[in-house]
Image (cartoon, rainbow, N blue to C red):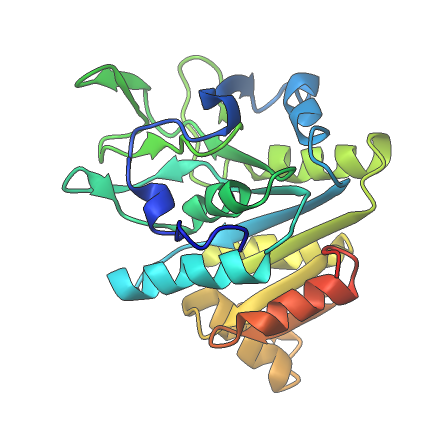
Length: 269
């Protein structure tokens, strides 16, 4: 990493503070039935390199130490990265502190790598509200938007409707395709960590689209199920065919993910 004085966990010391470059987080809202907002896609073109990697998953079954190790894992693997890194755009809290999730990974990577742009998407699953000292809250559990990202796209089902937690995925993949077709993004990637059915569907969708698709074995749940199926030669999982190429890297060795990214042109040596 570029700094030895700051660790991935210390990047998350201030749970509500905007840590995106310039201290500003742009929020855009779109209806799921509308066209993709060009203003959000253009944020990605501010990255040094025309490369994008989306990271998906969850942290179910992981303790605080596991989550800290997850942040270290991605910080090491992406050291020197200068493209777009993005994910879901939520932040979880526990006792007024950050409860690290996969959605915190893009902000951590961007904090250590000038030229990297962290973005996120999320579906509106409930009415948005301001609580406490004007803190934006997304649902009844106190989930907030992730303030480590330069931009967040909120996808809604009209002014009065609600979406499920996968309601932003068509927009997310649509933006990836826009970057490839109209912004000359040369490399697109996808990494699955832990996660459930939504992550599983994203991995399969990414592989079908030809992205550099990877799951981290040992991270749990969907990622481990997919890794096991691939290693045993099982092409069908959960009634769905695992079409396309899917790479498997071990959780205990972030260098293998790093080597994969270097070999495929996502990182400069």
